[in-house]
Image (tube, rainbow, N blue to C red):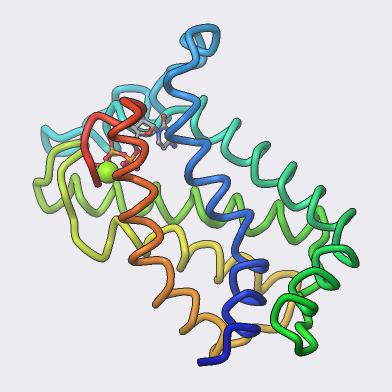
Length: 187
Ligand code: CTP
Ligand code: MG
């Protein structure tokens, strides 16, 4: 198994993980309650909400901010992080270069993917917060990858690795958030 490549893929997609987690996790912060407005403004289409109460401006704005912050930290500590993982694995690990622009596109893409999936879930009659296997885990990864294209060349092999590692990581992170009572449902 090529652990170096897995770490490179993780480094690339990290702003998307942070953005997606922050969008959910900031919902527990009481002082952000006033930004809790739904993005769809309550609008319905054929009797069903466009997106639902679960997709808020608070999640979108603070998710993108958190993803950009993560990318900024990554850009500052690129050399140290690359040195650390290279020495741990005793092989050169070429962590992708992270920039604020790339982190912004990855974070915005992640949360846009999440919104598009939410829109799709409402259209097929799934309620807010209901389970949509694979879609829930991969919507934001696909969005992040597509938006990253505006800034960097796509690496399809890396995308494949990201998809494979996201499914268990996502399930584990959401289970943890549920146990900590941040999320209402364990998915
Ligand atoms: N969240 C938010 N704004 C976003 C995304 C997420 O406020 N743009 C918060 C909401 O509190 C939401 C929670 O994170 O309930 C969990 O997000 P997610 O599982 O993506 O949304 P669901 O509520 O499951 O809605 P959907 O069925 O539309 O996916
Ligand atoms: Mg959900």
